[in-house]
Image (cartoon, rainbow, N blue to C red; front, side, top):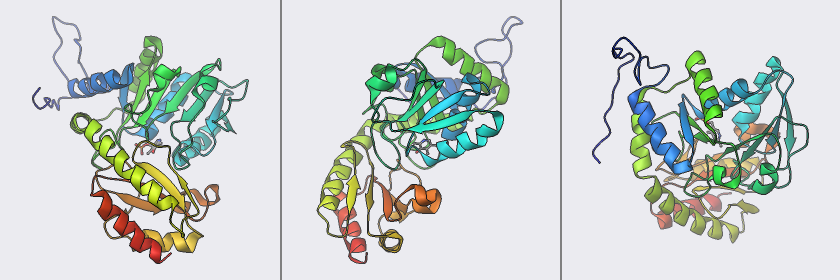
Length: 322
Ligand SMILES: *Cc1c(COP(=O)(O)O)cnc(C)c1O
């Protein structure tokens, strides 16, 4: 297949006086639809793109819940999701937190798990979540569909910050929800059309380009991350390492906030910046964003495509100053 076509139109002529597959870009557009087809195939459901992962998360809550209903959120899940639910609390959406390695609490209306959680890297108990009568959404941003397919594990919805591994190059902000049943997909599509958080065609095109290399990128990132996690485990300055055994994301603890600051500012090849899933490696102390929710010495490392030995040499010299 050649390069996917990029159609920047926001409106298309009616066909015999009626709207065709594409009429106005807030509803859908050809490049967005093509990226949705590709992503839907990877995760095994019907995909919808959003303007960001956070926009996708907000749409799930606002489209599927009503005031007075409750979300059970996995403890230690992505900080932004927790902040988003606090924001939506003003509209009457309640939130309880639970340990996702066990069953979700009864009497909730939406179960929100993360596989693996960012930055604690725990995996949910899929069987326990699937047995819950509520709708189950799994944020699989850090796993990608190559390592975890939540719809096959009994979840109703998969959520991705496609900004991370899926687009993969730190140049496209985009989110996705992949639905098991067409009715939920139709409801989310209706909500998205009315409220407007749809990505532009250039963003969808960058996502398609990223998906073309997803498998080779994630395979190499996994290989490097595994070897780095092992060596961190044996390092005297490192108190604990969290790595689920797959993917390019890991976190580890050094003694305290001061040591974490020295390590993150002491690397040269590995950038001191946020986000994850890009082709270049980056490290950051998460307490700058999450405060006391994370240990003060917790560093999150997203492994890119650089030579694994060079990455380790860079980390090792930075750890010397810890
Ligand atoms: C980054 C991230 C999000 C939010 O996605 P954006 O594209 O930044 O809005 C959601 N979940 C996880 C696990 C993330 O890492």
